[in-house]
Length: 549
Image (tube, rainbow, N blue to C red; front, side):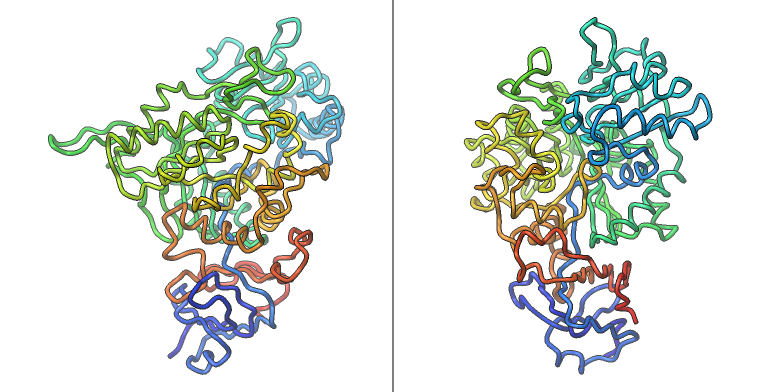
């Protein structure tokens, strides 16, 4: 039999229980039609024979929660992350440098800053940004995505705009606006420059795809398109389709449609109520390259920004009540979840604070009680702080938590400071889920943190913060379990376990060639393993070592 490609002489970890290890894979039409030992190659002739040279191969990484467009766009911003930034002064110096090369009146944008990592331990003030760029509009995006800092020129443009529900503007000790814009209030700033053009979104997807392939990512879930704070245009789905048509969508994408884009649709008497996109479109439409997954709903904010909805106050200062807040009023949130569930959606709700997580679980339970559905796989995006008493509810409801392993290293110290030692054990659980048979996907929330899957896996098994402190050692999982999360776990979270997550006949031919065997080295070195090649649909999308010959 003739096939498109034969990959031979590999050390293949298939993640298929029927055949855990192999050396040879045959590809036809973008799928694996045979996987086995070296003798398998004799059964086929092939257009291409790729010798893997004994290298380690694993299924393609699948990021279950990320923001590709934001990442692609942020590549053009001033890098305000720490390092290299150590202080507010460092950020202002970088803004001053960019402003010197930007026409007067234009925008100077930066991204990735985290006040927890700056010497001053605070956000840049509008006055400081004014001094750095007196003739420009300045917009600095916080690494969490849940707040931003702007200068007076931008404040003047939004000063008379009503602050939307679920948002706040920061004020200094004198009661004056200080430039901090939190949660839903960010829409006031975004509306000054959005929506983006289709071409701009496609360019961001192109750049992100290239980067993702270099890190072994073959699939990703885009956590919010079409409306709301995480979108870029009301016709954003068209931009994703255009990216595919132009051949620049290098990874497979599962889109979560923002709930703000859904509406109640008239229907014939006797038909079920439909809360969806026009035409009744909901979860599942699309193909193996681009499909509509669930609907994304925001409930609260972030831990490091201290805007997550908590039962008890954050440590130290912060908000007036010091317990964070809901972005969506709990009653409205409940109604949206029930309506989306009833209309066939996989509901994917952002919830980080323990109060928000509990509120979402109550809504999921009520939705299922009122309108029973089999195998809903509703998700809690992040599921940041989960009290132990609610673990059984997650299990019994079939809910999939979607935590981010890389948060442990990059923002773990900030999360510990916000929660205090007594609540940190409830944060970003992993082992607790697996011990109860709850599916665990792997994800990054890129660009909040570095989205390289091997770095996320490193943190999932090591549980160390950037300062070298333990995060929650009891939640550490094994290397195989972490790889399983980033492959089979993420596929299950998107209803794609029949075609993704393992290297077996009938599965998509998506896999990664690594420069070392992660199951044979010290776990401290996992994050340093190089990705040598990435294959999507049997085609080489990234090749750092010339395996293509």
